Length: 228
Image (tube, rainbow, N blue to C red):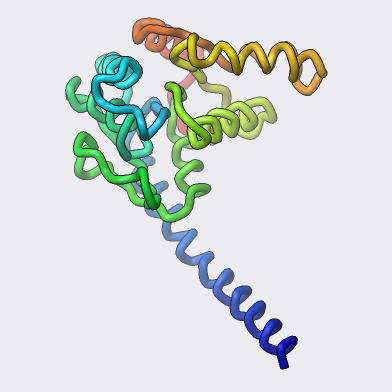
C-alpha cells in the first residue's frame, strides 16, 4: 500500500509539471511582447541589501543617469538596493526605467522608480534571466551576492560559447572585484580551465564615465539589437 501511494504521488507531480509549461510559456510571451518594444537598454545588477547613502548605491544612481542620458534604457531586477538605485538614476534623467520583478521571501519588493508600463513580474528565475540576456545591450555589475554572480557568469558563459552575441560586461568597483579577477587569472586560467582571451569578455572600472565610454565604444562597431 505504501508503495502504491508513493507511485501515486510521483505521478501527480509529473502531471503538475506538464501543466506548468503553460504558465512558463505565458511568462515568455508576456516578456517578449513587452521587452521587444522598449528599445536598447543596459542592465544594472547588484545587491538588494545595499542601502541609500552607501557609496555603491550612489554610484549606481550616477551610472544609470549617465546611461539614460546616453540614450539607453535601464533594466534592473526591479527590487531594492542597487536595483532601486539603477531605476532611480534612469528616472532622474527622464530615461526608460524597466523592472523585471520576481517574488522572493525576504528581499524583493517593487521599487518606486520603475516606469508604470515597464514593470514585469516573474515567478521563474530562468524566464526572467532570458529577458535580461536577450534585451540588454550591456551588463553593468555592481557589488552583490550570489544572484549577482549568477547573472554575471551566465552572461560570460553564453558569450564564451557563442550562444549569444557579444556585449559589454562591466564590473564596477575594483576594490570589490579584483579578488575575483585575481582568482580567475591565478587559478582558473593557470589550470587552463579558461583561455586567455576569455578575460577580454569583462572589464573592471570605478567611474560612471568609464561605463558609458565602454558601452558607446563597443556600439560604434556593433548593431543595437536583441542578442538572439
